[in-house]
Length: 220
Image (cartoon, rainbow, N blue to C red):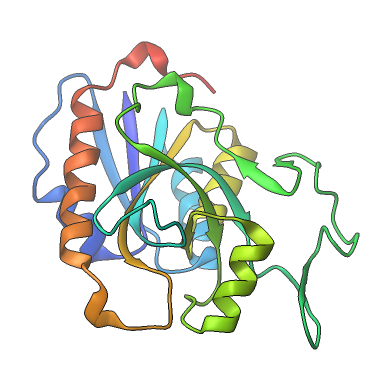
């Protein structure tokens, strides 16, 4: 099986590649997309259209809105939402779907969300499932954080997840997104972050997943 592992930054990929051992029956390729939706969409599309990929994985760190998802936890993302695509008013933010500028149920969207339909094809019962929110700027201001939590009810925040879901869905490639929590989303205080723990746990979970992957479970 040909598996593509993508991440936004080289340091995230390095944590995986330095622990990687040859895995029987699987060919592993890597793609560093760069940070953000635009870079991710471009690099991922280019890679998928020029590769014989059976399964695409997105791996990276994330912030948690959910108090029940702790720093160091690794989650598998069941849905993603574009959280910065819309219109800002004086006192609120409205998505394109809210404004009637896009159809919230036009493929690949379901009620304005991007859904991963492949999770149940794999043994991922040891991992918490999370709803992702993808933004252009990481949240670090109290009023903004509260607005996002109320509006989107997401568990985690990323800067690439929705682009990854969108491209894989449109091109009909099976995909999964794994994220490790480096911090809780609150007024920015990096002293409370643990990026080292998150990246180490992420690499371990990716390798565990690959070592236990069964080829018969892959289907678009």
